Image (cartoon, rainbow, N blue to C red; front, side, top):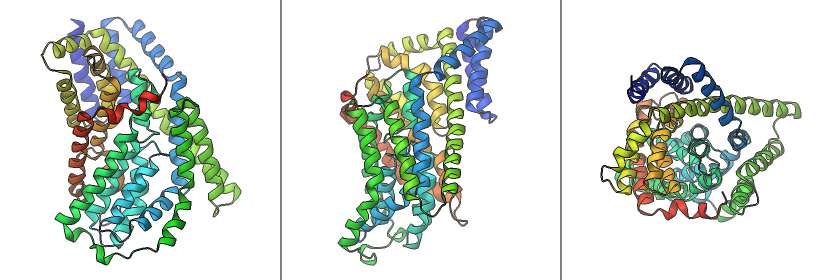
Length: 443
């Protein structure tokens, strides 16, 4: 049997395993191992599998991943998210939709210390959505805002998805992290505009501006004190990487240490013993989450080696480049494929399956890898709020009040999904949004 035929059959097996609910890491490793064993032999397949796992996971660059995850747990446990929301709510009081925009702004700021969209969504859905409902927001809109804005956390550094993409593609992780800053801010702006438009089209979903109490200026200014943890960590993370003072790994280590110190300093309702216990839980959750992602990355490397061996990448590259499609056409086709995959797979699964196939084509076509990677991450993030598998939808529903159904969250998310589609076209038309800041970061 030809290696190409074996490759196609193995990809079908991979999707069957995923359809059966098998974990993406196990599915990728199994499919890759079986394919390697058929093309070569079992002994060679074992050697390739073990060495691929070791060399990929032993990479020093991968230390940034658990550190950024730890930052997210420390930030959510320290009450930083609640204080951010309260401050934003004060500054936007008196504006129709102000509380919704405060939730979006809080998620955007929180993204600077949390690299997980799911964590950001769950934290803010628990804090902000009930508060919005108390102030007259329809439950569909309240939880949809949190599900959509939570996805910003995977664009604003630190971003777990950017690290995974960098590890799988070989692109500088520092450049990948900085590439998400401006698109993340763009999402925040577009989501706020969406809330304003919803207020005009669906007035029954929120109170009018005249019904909202305006907070005193003195109270607004006083609330800015609560921003100091975000400011400190953002300066360390952005300033360190952007200024060439730290590598991404060093910046992540310093920022994680700072957040742990801040957590111990600002949490006063726990005894010293309880604080130590909570920090221990953070490390345990970080280790568990990181281990799962490490398995996926290692398995994806095995599958990638198999794909290269079958010649699928070379065949697809020749077919795409020979189709006459211009570079922008190739990018659009690939971006659209992520929107389709987002209906069935989670973010990391999509990257692990597609990067081994798509990345060689992008390189051969001479497309800017940072610009393309940003469009991919934005497209993949759209999958987080795309029914039926949008994980942010489930994260919001998981912490929602008892009268909120998954259908409520889905019905409210559509306008924000449209806003994300618009963002893809903006980034597509203006590559500088994703390439300017990375140009100042060393390799």
